[in-house]
Amino acid sequence: MKGIVLARKLIVGNWKLNGSLPENQSLLKAMLSETSIQAPKPSHVEWVVCPPAVYISQASDLLSGSSIALAGQDVSDQEKGAFTGEISASMLLEFKCRYVLVGHSERRQRFAESNDLIAAKALAAMKAGLIPIVCVGESLADRESGSTFTVLSSQLDPLLSLLNPRALKGLVIAYEPVWAIGTGRNADGSTAQEAHAFLRNKLAQVDLACAAEVSILYGGSVKAANASEYAAQSDVDGVLVGGASLIISEFLSISQAFHA
Ligand code: 13P
Image (cartoon, rainbow, N blue to C red):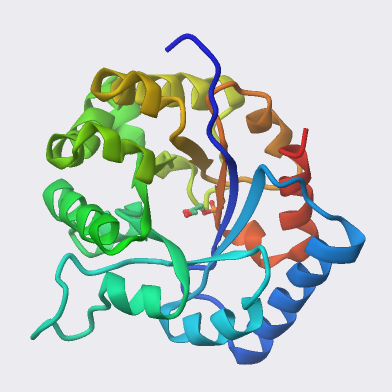
């Protein structure tokens, strides 16, 4: 898609299955002090943290009144009822979550979440007023067999077919190639840009104007040392960071790459 991308920049920390009450407190306090006196970030860059569900209440209290947004790591496609272990979008909203991850590859692989279920989860989140961060990405086998774009399409199409085109604006996409997650083998900037441009073009086929406003994040072994590679790409609007988001100095440097 040609033209100017208007999407806001998001620096999202996915804590995954990490943290404890004292660890979370010290990480969030460090983040809070970085956002205020020491290194104010520009308003077009938003920080988001995704703690494990049991710590959302703690994070919500600590982040209250700050510019750091809170996100769930997953959400049910159901509103309420006999769904043991699930958390609904309205519950996340009660604790001031603004975003929720949906369809992370770890959920797709380890919990056998289908593209249809992920579409239903994203829709449930949007209906309740959350912004879903919908994760897509190919495996190494997909990439080596040349089916990256086919896989990305099959992951996103069920959701796009359910959405009113104007609702695209309420969506964030995260491109996370599975082979780059937690491996230290990050996609280089041009590989990420190619996938992001493909994704934005798909969105543009639904609604050209809205597609320019959708933040498309890169995730997979992002760290301070490689963040500027992504910040330099026209269709990369931020990053979804796993391991490095637990280290304040790393998270801060990653963010600073997107401040320009
Ligand atoms: P890493 O940054 O640890 O590779 O994890 C990426 C990820 O899965 C973020 O959601």
